[in-house]
Length: 482
Image (cartoon, rainbow, N blue to C red; front, side, top):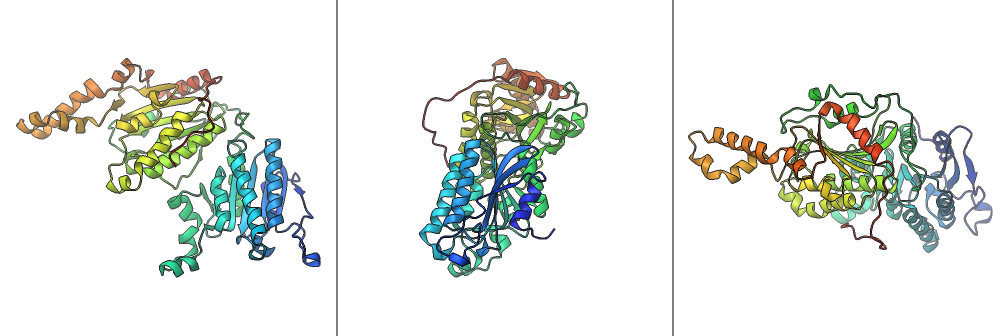
């Protein structure tokens, strides 16, 4: 699909015939006959699946879509209106930056928009679609919004362009490598989704909205499902190996668990794939899922995974979306580069997000939950309302094999067959100390369940928490370890 104009993009985005443009005649000051009505940005409102949504689309045919005083004022007016009316915002970015001749006035237009995005955060959903360049200070806007979509080989976000990078470092770097859709959706974590083309990007934005409420005082849309709440997951054993060290694809289990007449919406699928964050529907209700992915890095938690999870947890919490945490975690990544790169700081973000969240929180331990990763992945002590575990799951300070080597080092060394002795001691440790039934006996796990009954139990648990009310101590705000 070829590149659309600003107005064409909005017509594709909104329900047919519903878009109403605002401030059509606002224009740059003191230009007389040279003034262009609209000043390089189209703003207005319409409906998406019948719901009120506000939007702006920068027009790259007018001074490259660059930010100016009136350009920014139009966007700010739209943001203010959306906040008052309690409706989502979609911003379509296609701009070469701030207009140099306007100086401080142009920067003021951008600054107002940046502040308004921050003020609206947590009140109304905000989705960014980067269709072309988004550079300099304007590049801060999409990450400040709740969900960022980029178009492969077409959109770019960066603070300093390739020429500046080369002048400073002497290195040649392409636009794609510096700030393309693939870079931001897989390496930097600045984008949630890399669209194949503009049509895909606009359709994806509509899909994202279908999982979000219009504002923070209501719940996400509920869609009727014909799937049986009591459907048994008889295929679970074909997906999840009994050996806790064997890899599998957690997505296969998620597909089995959720309503079979809907799908899941992956969030940041290409970034930190060792943890999954996605929206799903259970009995037609939207639920946010955080799940370890044993298929990547064995499911270990690293810095990027913790940061990704924290952002998603906070998104769900501010929009009243319950959280389901699927735990199959061997621990935090035992890697020196991770430690030097701030694993503790990044891990603290996830801890903070879970502890602060007041929405219903349900945790299910599938096979294993080892060490501090068990504690941090929405354990009972981190504020989980209900913790379930499959029969045979393990909750332990470390894997039984590792524990055996430490606790029974001398006995293993003295054995005629050290390898066999190690396995024997590991099995004994697993049975006596690591079995989830021990955690249940102490109240850290609420119930042990049959894996086939997982869907039924999960939905029933969320039903009991539907009217949950919780609050945090009175304060201006906390101090999350950023």
